[in-house]
Length: 168
Image (cartoon, rainbow, N blue to C red):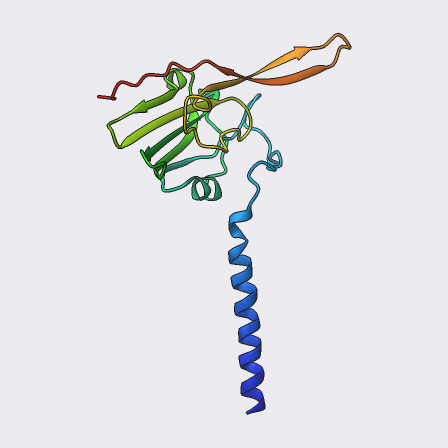
């Protein structure tokens, strides 16, 4: 009997530890991503969060493939489909060329669904989802030299063409 009680106590403690870790799983900080340690395949290589038709941003970022973007790409693209109530229905993130980033902004597909597209430049820069005209932009980096000779990198959003016409 004592052995059975001990086994039950150990099992309950293990269940508590596992459930506690599961509860904190959504607290992953996607902004504190360290630069990759593996060698870059070519100069100015970068990575993006990548997923195809994910149900929410957390799962997209959590399970994103960790691979280098192809040499013919320069940006990270995010396409977010959501309902008029703000519920995400589909999230796609990938490496993209400049031509794929030409049409950023939000588009009303119909009265109940919206698509917002954004592009950014930089290592794993596509953490967030575009949800409106203020964050559905084309954000690029520019180096700016100050009078002291030091260089600062600025993220400058490029104005997005925002259309309210339905996509055909």
